[in-house]
Image (cartoon, rainbow, N blue to C red):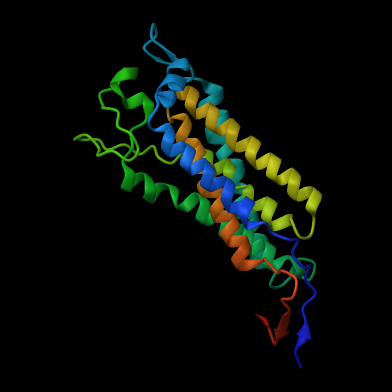
Amino acid sequence: MPTTLQRPQSRPLNLWVCLGIPAVTAIALLLLELTSLDMDIAKMAYDPLAGDFIGRHSYFLENVLHDRAKQVVIALAVLSCIGFVGAFFIERLKPWRRELGCLVLSMALSTGFVTPVKVVTSVQCPWSLTEFGGKETYSELLSPRPATDKPGRCWPGGHAATGFTLFALFFVLRDRKPKLAKAGLIFAFGLGTVFSIGRMLQGAHFFSHNIWTAVFCWLICLGAYYAVLYRPAGRKEKVVGAEVVSD
């Protein structure tokens, strides 16, 4: 006989807010392409006397905030994978199996999409542009790329995604631990912002690159949550043998 699976019912999810804010942000970013804001912000981090960005050779920004911080997030992802596998065998973890699976899926997708999109878009980094001592020509996001032997690999922001991927913590915890979920949201947004600023000071990304990354990571984490965990009022889930099904 099927038995009812004791999982928390999801709190109401306002898709108008969850999708509306990213949509408005995306429209604003497209309009931003009509301005010089990206370039103006990048110039604030550029020292024309030194001919380089002020953080380009910073030990803290490169070795600590970039390399070591990325390793910490990677370690968290590895622990999540181990936890997900362990949830099939360890009793204490079994009630969290879906949440751990959703966390692994979210982090994999919201970091894995970056490199393929970089290759397709071929957007140049600020440090490669003639305006900042490089040899490449600037082009707007939706404009054709100037001919070059070295296509750019700077949109969206990879390091920003390392921080914003932790939006997954908010969705994974929102039904079981609402207070921790809010803390996770603040932490993810703060970490992604710090990572973004660090790379902007190094000349690796424009301002808009990182905001686009936050939008993508949010939507990916939202989609994973909606597909794997979201259980609104009226939906019943049952266990049939080892399989979970929804009415």
